[in-house]
Amino acid sequence: MSDTVVVGLDVGGTSTRATALTLTGERLGTGRAGGGNPTSHGADRAAAELSTALREALRGVDPARVRAGAIGLAGAGRLRADPAGRAAFDRAWSDAGLRCPYTVHSDALVGYASGTAAPDGTILIAGTGAIAAQVRRWRLDRVADGHGWLLGDAGSGFWLGREAVRALLADLDAGRAPGPLGRTVLVDLLGDDWVAERPRDTVDAVVQAVTRRPPVELARLAPLVVDAAVDGEPVAAELIPRAAAHLVTSVGRIRPDDATTPLVLGGGLLTGDTPLGAAVQVEVGRRWPDAPVRSAGDGAAAAAWLAARTLPDVTDPAARHALLVPSAD
Picture 1 (cartoon, helix red, strand yellow):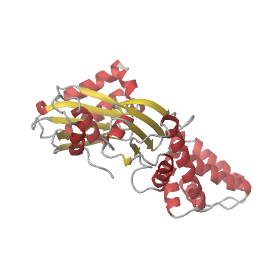
Picture 2: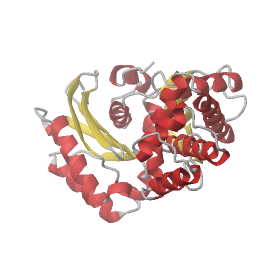
Picture 3: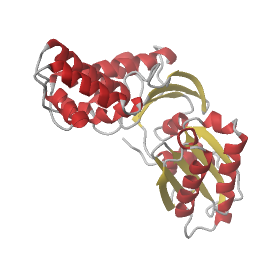
Picture 4: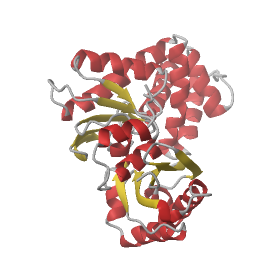
């Protein structure tokens, strides 16, 4: 068993990360490549990025030592149901010299595993989008939101960006001078914070700047809201608790009120020292006071652990989790 290696990949829309670990937790290699989500980029490009990350992680590692692998990505079910997409991933796997089986998991399950070894619990992710999912016996059970920018993703980065623009437009409509956040949004969208003598002209320019781009790009304004909230900017300070309430409401749709299982927080808006993460933790603590709250961590390592769980000689998965998956808390 000491010679056994497991491989895990965390495949996202903007980056692909791979890691090769021994069952004792020794990190033999890591790899990184561009976005590998087949839904966003197509199966062939996704497989190419997967191959790049895999080869980098396995540099200097005998592929024959690798006994299991796992891949976490959004839209895992779609990949499993797409023969051409799965064939492209199979080729990338074999081209890296790997002959062992691999499993494909949703990014929500991998995110959950990056925060806890408990077989039952909840994951809440807020990044560009937002989704909550219940995990039972290491399978996704009920899911809330994740409906995309048009129909849902309440409390997400997209939601924060859109609400910041809406607040700016409301100020301009009312003839009020934009506050600090509004001026920052103006600079981002138009290049400066100047408001035309006829405010409607600036309104039209803002609307055009937003609608010329893909709607989901509003999510790139979320860091501006977060930074403004840290500085106590009034509009941002009002948006953060609203976003937190939306996110916790999504969790409440799928999580019993008396649950004491772990709740893992993932995504760029909830991990690290962020005002939204802090606000969500407060709301979660009020609603589920006896539940441990964890931060999602290394998704590639979590995927490797999910791979290790499939090996017959791994008899204590929780102990193995402590070795393979670094704590993010």
